[in-house]
Length: 513
Image (tube, rainbow, N blue to C red; front, side, top):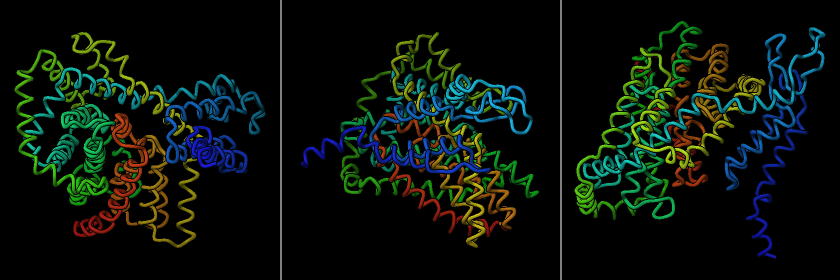
């Protein structure tokens, strides 16, 4: 009996049953109303079911996304565009009379629903991630990443924490100049982090703990640096633009930095310590520090074996510097970060630094392109169907009805709702206006509310492995299990909330906010 139960528990279909039941209960149990359409309910059912499956099962994320998109497309549970009015309508209503005008909705439900299911795959953010994967592959193929990692190990390798702080420092120094956290994390820092892990003999199957630690440090350092500067992440200016307009304040680059610098630096300093504790590395850390001199000597020996930099390494350095320069000057050149990364890949291909077989064989890139594109589609549809706004409004109403303090309630709710999104940009666009308006109505202090929403917009990405492109890329190598990723993210979320509600508030009071 026990052996039968074990077999059933390992069966993929059986493990998905709780997620399927949750989805079915929402799909058929929720009643449409003026605020939540049938399409919005179905989108929420599929999304919540997928998220629950991600947390509770080991089913591949790409399979879940494919299943969700197929189901939504077949049932026409997307928002389509009425060609006559240019307005959005439920795809299932295409060809039926518009109750306001009496004319039929001019769209093809089946065809347009399928087209909508592919919208996320045209997202520039998704293609930036895809391109950054291949830049990372080039770093690996040319052995430039290995060389850089050996140099870092030689400089900081006496202690594992030294390597961790070197990664954190790299992020903090790059963030003001590279406004795409995905390009910065996935295209520049991640390849070096992976190379360090490999050089230390850590792979997803052999001694994964070392790699897990470095991967988690890199991912969360990316989010801290994104929160520290106005230019640290693409959607950051959306928050300040809305707040400045609504409250009549001037939350500019220096104001952002003044407010973030103390709590963000504290978080950055504590990050490696918290993750070391979370992974239970304290004892192993003591052992590695005793062997620090051996590690440094080994790194020097490996560098000697590698010899001088090869032609391909120099070519890659040139291309990466070109990409970095174009990313830094994007506000002047107006060249999209994704186009820069794709141009870099094209140049590498023509210089034969990498080959097309290297690109086509990079399965992690193609896999991430698919599932992240699918999640972006669902997130956009949740916003278009009004489901995201519905949840935001319900949160505001609940805060008012329960007579909860507006500031902490709005800030924590904004932080937590990131769990619903596969893009920090999408989360900002969908919710920041709603939460700022709610805070305005509820009488929240403008500068403090703006600070919370500004900094939590990036920090809240710690909750999942799909919150932003860089998180997806750090997760892809397979060093960190899904459950461990979520546990570490939850622990850091509690820490961030504690720091910003104590030290952060005290610092902002000192600044006169």
